[in-house]
Length: 160
Image 1 (spheres, rainbow, N blue to C red):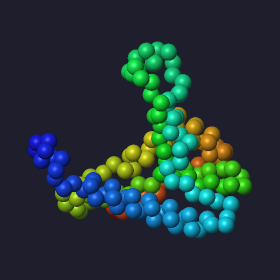
Image 2: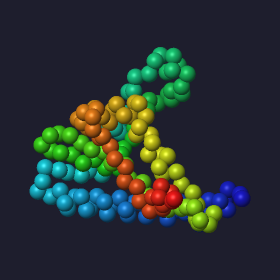
Image 3: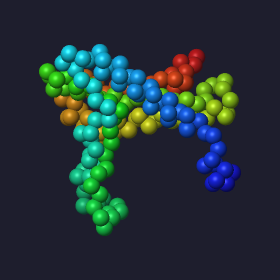
Image 4: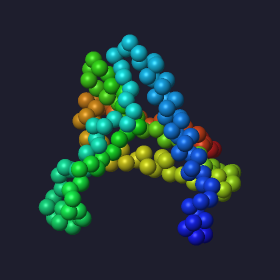
């Protein structure tokens, strides 16, 4: 399949992204309403990690081996989908939302594939674990992040 044909064809990713955005909006709207007049607030796309990689300390040897553009990079980071803040304790729980439309066991190949669950694993790498835990204010005994999985991604886990 040529580039034009591939680019212009109907793909499951086109509608899956729109549906995921709708699911995230519903999640946000629900908790925003529930948290009115409480010590909790929900934030969409929290910004505290937007520059996480810009000043990340790397050994000199590593810096010499990676690309450094003439114009310095000023923004390079990540954003969980949501943050729920406890305004009294100053603690935060970060939330990663993954909705996956696509193929499951017994479906058609045309249903598409997805790797939403794999992409959420980035939050469990050592560097991000440490940064998220520090910003959350939550101690080592407790989890500062949870995943919200919806649609066929759950079927993959529930197939017997």
